[in-house]
Image 1 (cartoon, protein in one colour):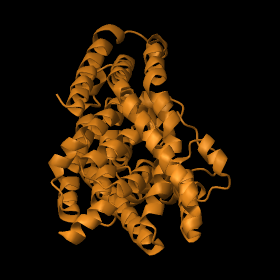
Image 2 (tube, rainbow, N blue to C red):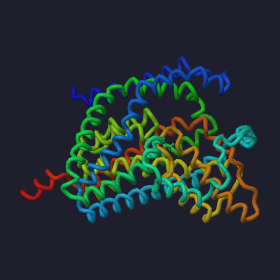
Image 3 (spheres, protein in one colour):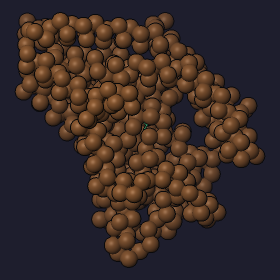
Image 4 (cartoon, rainbow, N blue to C red):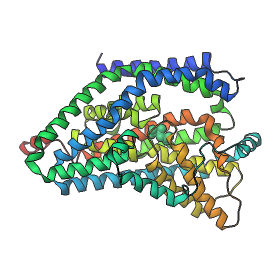
Length: 439
Ligand code: ASP
């Protein structure tokens, strides 16, 4: 059995066993959420210690080495601009497509209409789980959050606080400087390349902890929230999100990959399975990034494209998150009895895309940014003299968030991988270029 197949089989087994353990031994339908949280906390802690922390240890240095070697190897700043520009356009367009699909589904099938009044009343009386600071909400805040990340004022702080977007933009700047000094940069870039190789070697080892990590984290997720909630009055919401994600994963992105990347989408998806499974098991695109880089290179993306496009993708490109946020916000307004107008749907498309860009690639990353979208819609409601939606409405979706997080993170990582494969056309590796020249 090939190593990748063995790993895949082990992770699939871990997913199943983890879910069974969580359901049969950890979930207690009679416990209060707080008691349940405490009872299963150890599983999450063990999963974090044994798997997520070692990966997170590597991820920031890896983003640095991978972006820097990608940039230096492309060399020509003009070409770099073309690759970077094309990547960003690809990211934004696919995210807008994803939200549009999500919102269309939510507006058509109205998942919010069937939510039990008890649940709505409970959410209305609850506290907003992520209380936004004054002035930190709305559309302006979404732009500002992204701009602040793009223009860091302290590289070390950005690295320490794991602000990946800031690390990337600072690294791009350094890369351009290194290209400008030509040959004299060589000793430094050679050292960074060596560091990159060493980190990737570590990833190859840590990857074998994936089955254990996934088992612990899935057991925790199922044990913490229970599977029964998925079939409750939130069942329609869950179903619409899953259908939307499936459309984006199995139809939209494969068509885009076929047309713009000239690749066979499902073969590539099969090649990406370690990363996709890992995304599903961990609900974190950031923790998955090292595996995504490794798998994409194996599956046919060039080293240069994978090195540059994937770190950016893990931070910026979140198709699944954008789609989910769109549906979640429409759902919340529906459940509270609002009728949204077309203009308000457009506000949601715009803010959901922006806030998906700003969301961190960690479990539950989009819960914080959903508030930004709700506030933007609330501003339009206030303008029309209507009472705004209470921010605590987000409490409605908390019980099903983890499972949907696993699904949307898988789509996020798949979207990044498709980007890397398409950009391989613009940034092939040198050997490929040479082969083509002599073909
Ligand atoms: N967990 C997602 C990710 O890591 C972000 C989110 O919460 O939507 O990509």
